[in-house]
Image 1: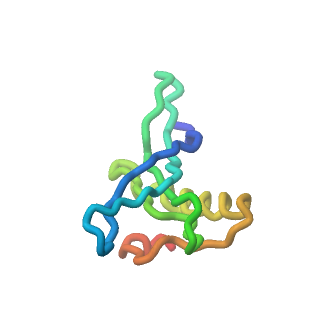
Image 2: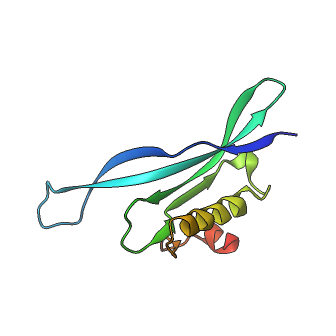
Amino acid sequence: APKIEFTGRIYVYSRNCSLSTKPSHMIQILSFFYVMVERDEEKNEFHPVGYFSKEKNCPELFNLACILIFPPHQRKGYGKFIISLSYEISKIEKTVGSPEKPISDLGKLSY
């Protein structure tokens, strides 16, 4: 049976246009991405299962911005595991949060 592991945090900078009166205004968002992988012990390979992201320094205290479980791995409980992990990380960081809004239909089912 494959083992489930999480990689360390990956710091990703992204630039997005803001809805500002200045058309060329750019904002910078620092996010953490947590990638979940399955380990195939026989082949000593790692395969991505899904990920979640959260903004660092989010004023709304969202503990989860985006979650994705790749289709072949859906319906195995990984989404609920990742949601639980996001809350555990929030506890370690001593913050109370909720998922970013609006929540998708699938997100509502999971939460």
